[in-house]
Image (cartoon, rainbow, N blue to C red; front, side, top):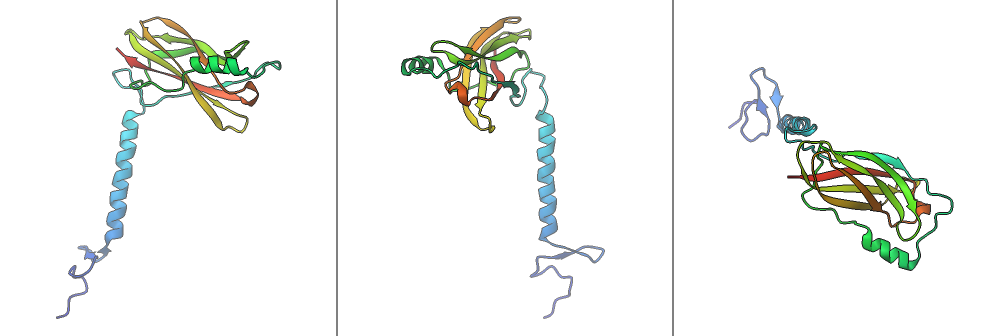
Length: 188
């Protein structure tokens, strides 16, 4: 038994009413374009702030690190004390909140065990309390390689409250070139 040329039996191709063929490649392209379109649509839906005041991802601000010429390394005892104060493990449940604003930030070298720090202020500009706030700082060398991530956390920032934070950086000031910073929080 011979089959007609446009028969779909035993073939991965099917005939269209206009006589052209459609095969699996077109189906795959169509399905792939649907997937890309859905991804783009979702990205568009989540790229801004929601009505709950929660953003989708942290945005970082850049800062330069310019240690003083006499900034030295910590002694072994100072490094132990600084490591006990430095936070490096992020908190669970924090997310970008549009009501938390970094009002100032800068690299500061302090004598003694604190050494390299990023200091500044965070303000709760919203109308509701923030249960937990977390400042995250990533530090980089001259080549742009990330050398570490350091944190500082605080709890219960009422509307209008300002938090003066200090993030202790454990790396030697001689290898630091720049940093970036963001703030996250947990709403009440």
